[in-house]
Every structure is written in C-alpha cells, then in structure tokens.
Length: 206
Image 1 (cartoon, rainbow, N blue to C red):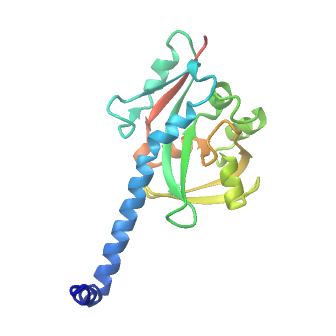
Image 2 (image 1 turned 135 degrees about the vertical axis):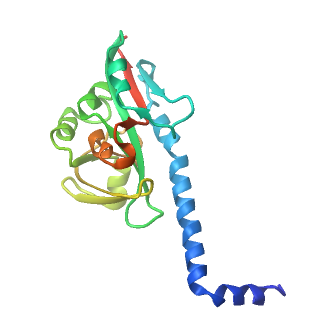
Image 3 (image 1 turned 45 degrees about the horizontal axis):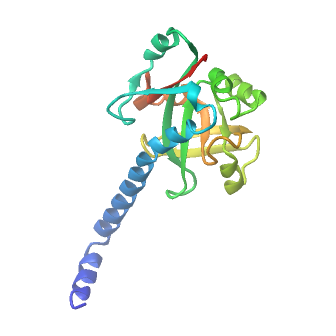
C-alpha cells in the first residue's frame, strides 16, 4: 500500500500518456479476442445434421493464412463437387468496442445450395440481387432491435474499415445467432482481402 501514492502520482503526471496506454491495451485486447473467435465461427458453420456432405478446405498453417480465390475454380472442377463457395470473415463492432459481430462473406448463389436450412430461398435470392444487403442472425436482430430494411454500419477491427449493409432477411435457427452474412464480393473489395479467401466450403453430391 505504501507504493499507491507513488503509482497515482506517476499516472497523473502525464495524463495523455496514461490515456493512450490504456486505449492501446484495450484495442489490442478487443482485436485479439476477435481474431481468436474466427475458428469458432467456421466450426459453427459446419455443425449440423448434414455436415457429412460438407467439406472445409483451408491452409494447413491455420485460418489466419489466406488462400488465393483462384483455387476455387480448381475445386469446382473436381469430381463429385456439387457446390463451392469461398469464405471470408471480418470481425467488427457495432456501437462500441465490446459489441463484437463476425461478418461472413459467402457466394450468394451457393448459399441456399450448401445450407438450405440457413435461409429461405427468397432471402438467399435477395442476397444475390444486391451486393449492399446482408442476412442477420436472429440473436442480433433481437439484441439490437433491427428490422428488415434497416441500414446498419459496422466498424471493422482488422482491417479497420467500415461496412454498411441493409438487413434483407433473417438467418435460420441452424446457424449461429450472432452472425451477419454478406456477399463475399463486399469483403473482397477491402484491400487486405482482395483476391483471397480464408477457406473454401464444398458440398459433395453424395
């Protein structure tokens, strides 16, 4: 306890330095937590009763190492591949740093083929018609009181860029509650993601 006055004096000696130090630690912690949750998001995408027909292809070094999107054409031409989509995920926050929301980028035309239980054909078609819309998990809709047609702006953590979308539909109960799906083209426009994917999701024909 005898060192407390000394500690307080040093903290107050240069308040700008103290504030910047606290903010840097807080932001680093939030980004680290977001990146650590990326593998968990991918695992949830495969966790349902028909996952035996779904494969995930990624870099053997881990999800943090992106793959060229051009590999998708090679995978699509393989025997017994009925559908394939690249996958990207960006961790974002909503109104404050603690409100973490993963945003997944997928091919809208393949969404209903690979995961028909995730979204109705109408919602999947809406995602394909407009690149400015997104499908939102029911948990997020309830938590933030979002409604169909609402325009939402999310703030990316890594990379640090804003992402806006219009809520076009709600994801089904088979997918995680706290996920936003947008066309993968939206994320591919971000400099760090251009021409790359995190993994490929593949559905076999039998």
